[in-house]
Length: 192
Figure 1 (cartoon, one colour):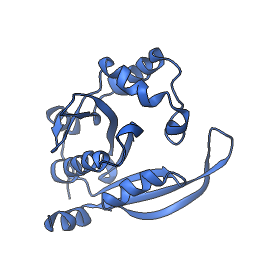
Figure 2: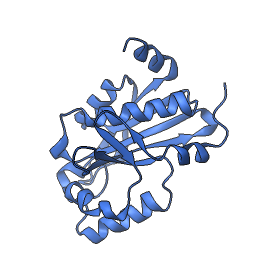
Figure 3: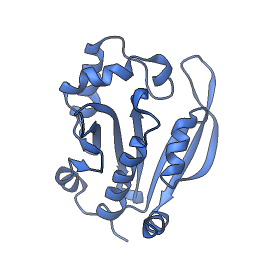
Figure 4: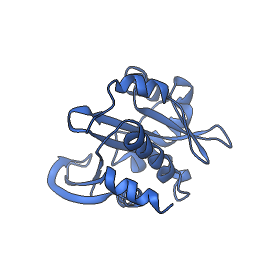
């Protein structure tokens, strides 16, 4: 078992990925308006991060998260319109041959399979190119939409950590862990 030697070099060569309807590409400051469109919603961002109050705050977050360390982080752009509708990233843990998948999407584009399509592209990158053994995701137990994405990606629930975090309203939160192994991924993709 071997993880690809220079992950950053591989990522640098994989900075833009295409699916049937999407272009996964680096997030830039030009994406601030599209990101602010969904990041300003407390309701939608409740499970992900604190909502943004100004477009300048969105720009600062893009700089801090996407520009200072862009490796493995992608904007999800609709090829048809050029609009960025969300982000997705694969945070590699090379010592353990695994990565954490994280994602967020503009709710105006939910229910069309875009996040599953983007997730499948990152699973392919992780398992077929980077040589990962496991990809996992974590969600707030109440975030059923995220759980549905995990399930469509072929992830199996591994467990629940009870009262592991405190939400924005001061309530204790349970986190659900789910993952997919390389063997499961390969088996799922044999049928297609």
